[in-house]
Length: 200
Image 1: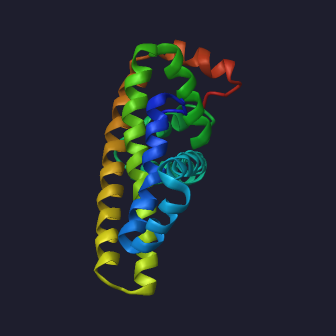
Image 2: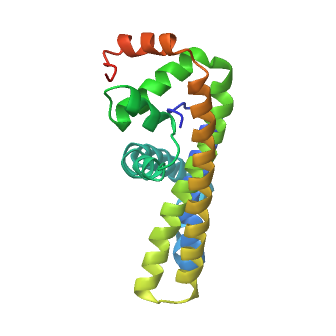
């Protein structure tokens, strides 16, 4: 998917993902959140949420998405390619190099599509991250109570992750078609500039 662009809309997403744990805490431990709200106020919680959300996003993107989601997406490509598996077949690259190569090509060849693709990718990342947070709360609730909240949050986790995975796959299919629309000689030019070798 897309690389990281920090815009006002990104700040709103950071705020949302940072507020989600506070909301779930309110559902699970209402008194704690009410007490916290009295201590630091709405502005304090909002600033904390923005900080938590922004840090969480970059940690998530550099670890969970890069090392787990991408590999899982590639593993499910047995009968078809995405841009990473295709580039790995054509050039001497691993999945991270293929990802970076596609970012370089995409920003050079499809400038008009960068913003729409970034918006769609941000929504997908939001679903993945929401799933991580609800999974953590589901585990916590299962350990302390094994009640209905644990099951409910586990169900939300599955909905978030399955939706994100499928939407991610659709987006990668579209980006793969964009890649195939580029002439091979032009693609080779980008590859040579990156110091990457073509497979024999």
